[in-house]
Image (cartoon, rainbow, N blue to C red):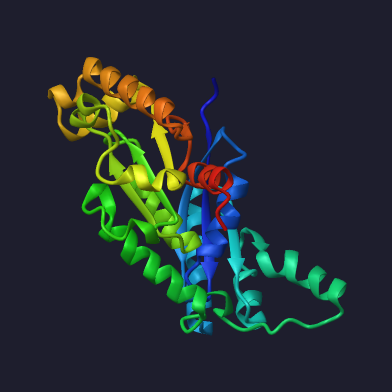
Length: 272
């Protein structure tokens, strides 16, 4: 197999750069035989910063012997013009999508810097903050109080991805997501932990391939029974048996990203 091509990618924005990264990542992941070195330049809001960015891009291109790729979400046209003078392949989110949308709507956009992230007083923003606080307070079975407020309750054995998925649901969608570990004591009792039976409609389970679970746990507690393949096989088998018996919908997270898991949870539980 030939060596992968290596390219440097810049994500440049007058805000956080998250939109530029999301756009870039969705495109770059389609090229498995290319290795991308990624650089983020956020809060580019002056001519001096734009000129400095051009210098960085050009210097990197000389070092690589190949021009960098640049994704931008710069609203200020003067700054965008400067950055696009760099010796690079530049893709502008606003030029690509906003100009055609203006033509279709017959209206000019506001061209306001940071508008997509400037909603600190909106109800959606407050809802997300509340959801994050709730999710942190209900991580890993810390408490079973106030579960009636939860939008979703994730259950799984340790290290299946409950916590990152819960936080993603809270941060991205403003959902209150609690999560509970399934432990050997639950299997011995043959019952769900805590008071989860009362909230069965909110439950969603995660499972994972035992080999993958053993690998993850080995990094955390090398050489322990907790990380042994035999124990991982036992816990996974018991957890899946419990979820089938309790009628809990579940997903194998072995090869799934947090985004894919979260989307499945939203669809299965019909969450908005």
